[in-house]
Image 1: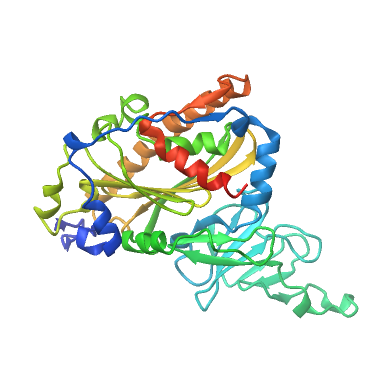
Image 2: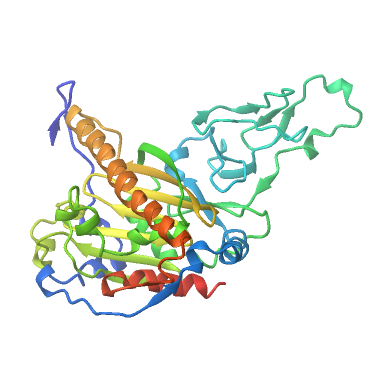
Length: 392
């Protein structure tokens, strides 16, 4: 319990072990003590071409990113009816809205008159209608055309046939997925268990404290790899967060092409789980997910990081980063903690993980190494590649 700025008391929301679903609790209880963790060596490799080749990139686009629904944004960004946000991360102009009934909708962000974007920025808007800046055609938040300037100048214009082009969309565990090519979506790659985990972690109802986009000169898999392995943490992050995480393997569960990694923090022993039933589980355990095909979720003590890694070229990836908190800051202390955390994580990801991806891509583009070799602390990368390559 904390004192709020207005003198009232306020209780910060936390997640306890008992609030998680049964499967997730069982997985956490399998985490060994740091001293008992064993690293199994491996000798897996991948060729340079999977990070640099146009042929591999086009295959991924055709057989993954256009064949299956992909994550576009978070439910938490559009919590209230009447909210809408534009999105260009995949190179396709999109509008994602929450209708008056609370349903999520996805549209091509293009007026049915001459194709102009209705919303040009990436801010969240609360409004009941959207008006094209070119000729002022107006649409409801549900995509229906509701107004045409000088309607009498058109012959036989049927507004009912001129609504925004809609794409299939669905909320899954607090993540909004969209079928980008408009075909009947195949949801089979999404895991019900991971969606339950995300519900337990409160992702769908969280508060978006901050978000930022990064345009990186690196292949999306090069950007993804650090979030699948612990090998880099004490080395790349030696001056920031490396001292919080041991060199120990995760408890890993694969749900198709979805990866759930759970690990204890520095000094973890299983008995800590039962010392205080009301304790914040994120102080003891880190959850890291890679959900099909390109969504990363990592838990921290006070917040959850969500990243969408959107491939734009063999050596270009747009990353949308979201920092989620259980609720808006209700005290000055909470605001200070959230602000400090946001600055820290943008520095860690932006200047360490993302920088590492870009400098790695430079060498890969030069043809070195001809193949990447992976160790026992990077096993999850190979598990993930095996799963997505089965779809190629």
